[in-house]
Image (cartoon, rainbow, N blue to C red):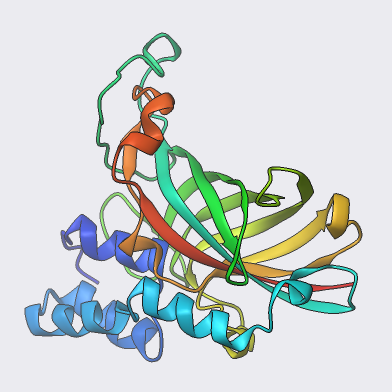
Amino acid sequence: MRMVRVPVTVVVAALLGGFVGGIFSSGARALATGDDQARERVRAQAAVPAGEQASARLHAQVSGPDQARAGSSNAVLVIDVNNITTYLDDVTNAEKATRAVPTPAIPKPFQNLYGIGDIYAVNGQPARGTWSVFTGLMFLVPVEIPGYAINDTFRGGIAVTNFEILKEDFSPRGTIMAMGLAGGQAPPLSGAFGLHFGNLAVAGGTGEFVGVRGVSGESTNPTDSFRFASTSEDPSIRRQVNGGKLTFIVSLVR
């Protein structure tokens, strides 16, 4: 198979968003052959409904704040997060958090990523809290592309993520911890409750969420929302810049 140069936007869309349907066969052929029309079909397959519309539909399917409580044997949490910035580890320690202006960066394989966002709603009800993630980027792709890691699947890397959920008055509810594979398509059967991207297992929780397990990922496409910044950017300005929005799905069982 000949190796080709592919636009980084196409590859990142595959890794951090997800290709659905026949993407794994047709997408690989398009990337490998350099067929421009095929690449456009790949991009079209990666598209998903606008984040706000997808989030609204999910909220309509979930019956209110009681559904979000872990006291029941099963619960689906629809967690809306805004002001998202993902910081790429691209400078020395001495340079980190020193630039008080937006400082864009481009993700690369074998780079660490730190993501921070503000939780503003849970199942359509006002909430507070923090979403955070640490990801070791690998950029796994099932086709030979210079600079990317060939294997059998599309994945961005290995992620550890936390949802620290507060009530609207800032009193704590608890934290949900998940870990697994960032980006790519969601696990089998998870589309029934709105999970379309990512493949993370809920490892446990604290507060209301002690003893839970389950699955987690995104309903909306991460590539619609991620703002990549250098770790040289001062994180105190995160809420001042135009960060992204994402809707996460957390399906819990006890």
